Image 1 (tube, helix red, strand yellow):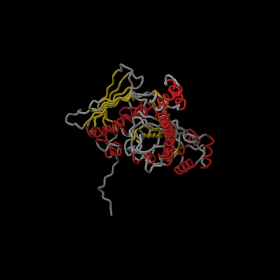
Image 2 (cartoon, rainbow, N blue to C red):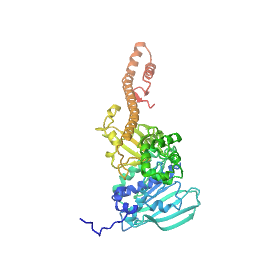
Image 3 (spheres, one colour):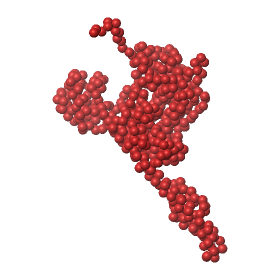
Image 4 (spheres, one colour):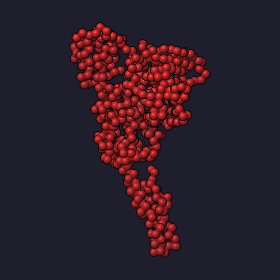
Length: 528
């Protein structure tokens, strides 16, 4: 059988690939697309501020009736007060797929340099309209305005309009405006839930949202405490494969193999470098650019098998911390009890990760037959594919590894469980980044972290139960005080039984220290 000479072969640009396969980036239909666009733009806006130590102020609006003949087209606008984008980088940052400042070993909300550009691409293919970007960097004297589209064939930006204005204020940040085809009515619950969860995970942010009906929701900043910004670090040797090793060689300025190992990796000093080089029997003075494929393969295998490396540092991770988690849960959910825990950094496949968990109980939380789960990865709320996520596998009441009755939880119960995983390599199940795979190391940390906060909840429930039991005893005694005082007054010939009643009340107060008694027959639990 011969191959037809009519077969045609050609390559696709990144833009054309995602144009043809927009579903894998979350833009599968008008409902998901409008949610995904809001999410991607808000995440970029938050990263532009809090990753640089700026308390975020985020303004989001969705407008309808922007194209009279197309009621399904919406205008999405997101403004931040971040560091801004240099004008030379704006076209590529918004109109060239897989171009990003995030391709370094440092935690950011986005990972692929794809999200905002996919929103622009989806808007372009459904409306034909360009994206408008307005930005000014800190200390710049000018504001820059661009209208951009994407050349899908070549994956490059097309600048349709460019201007700059003299800045009359000290404003800095970025405003992005794009048109897209969407379905607001069906996407509305998800978008509101996304913003609510963002306010929980980032209580240090001020977020204003205006929907197509001109309803305005304001999530007020409830703390000025911010997570530590992440710092770029070098790769850990146990997390390196052959291709990354080759790329490090190409970008390195080192002259010898020993210098390369010491300078391009974390956790390798001169002694460790000598040990590795002796193991592979290579010349320490050899130029790393002259390494053969066999040399590189042997080095990578040796690095992965070497068991004396220190664990990866967590400087490149930006975890929230227990106070921020508790503040977010309290300010939005108004619970009766909150607890939070941040675990120490752990490692999987040479990559550091941190798991944090929070529990909120009672108060304004409605009882349910299972926990309300709030999932986050690198501070991003995950709203889809909950049942396939590793955390649900841990907390699910019927088959999960955590048995809630051990922690005094009986269903239905007003319980919210928050789990945040941060890493430069979150093990997502797909490009849509909505579900985390059940990697054993991650699953164990999630379980242990939830158990930590669940134990605090158990202690609180047991303590409250004892207080209620004391209150019931106090009520039983106090309601008889008037009759007992009257009888004792007659026996002792006292003219008034009030002094006897007061003495008996003092005795009750000393006995039941955790109960507040406003008056005879009026008993309430202590709020302490």
